[in-house]
Image 1 (cartoon, rainbow, N blue to C red):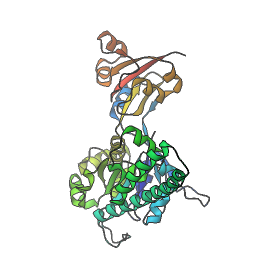
Image 2: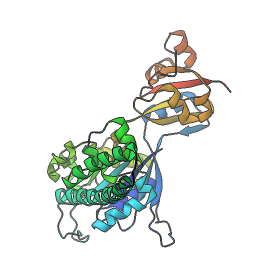
Image 3: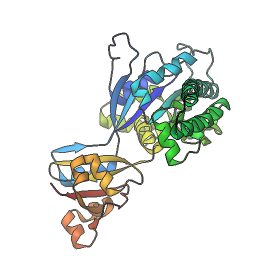
Image 4: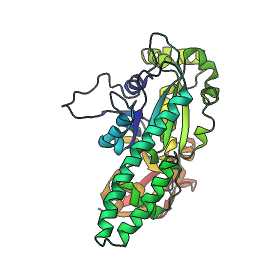
Length: 362
């Protein structure tokens, strides 16, 4: 499952968005420790809906994204650093920064004015400083250990962290640092916040909804989103709340009146999914039609492990057909007759939209 942590300053709509995304209506009770509220959203996928209509299974299981929100969001450097102590944020695959663009005198901004560009840069600085503190503490420890005769591994770690420190001191996030596979693996255990892909969720004023396509430009964030692993998606939380309270037919009619093809919540979920470079493959049958999330470039044997480690260990072959072919033919048997169902080995790279049955030894 993909995991994303929501960050944002007070009065941006962050917690409301979390509740809308996950249907978690109340903050969980804690025992004095800093903890996150965690909820799960389904990834909208018309292909899975069509496969379900075709096979009429007992179960329909979409891919999911897990979202975490922490009450009292970071609005100070100490607050940003505190995220490092919360497992749900430390282990997140991406960060979603909810940025206020709506104007409402009844909801005062923490900085007394609405300035999305300022807020994005301030939050970025806080996250960078939180990571810098981690790097500096680790470098101090490494220096002591190396004086005692530490080995080559410690020296290599020191070199990489010194590179990280220089990047952070220059005001750049670690997601902008180009690292080789070995270097990235060495840093993985630190779970640096600024190394995580970043999605800016621009919470628009209702009056600006017709200009949603220009939200990045209106916010003055054109240069920022061209940074590494950074994207933006516009929503209007006020409208989303209204949509969430309607029945499906009324919600669709309301969105059509507004010129929206899908809800902003679906766009946030899909953008989170795309930001991380994930794709979906499907398993189908009378019992269940399910979407599975994997990183782009995953070989078939590793994809089988997403279903069960026993299938990965006993992998023999993957029976693969394209979603489009299966939908057009109507049955797997018809696809086989037309040569569209093929056998692939463990090194086959799974493609978005593959429908797969894994043959495996028991």
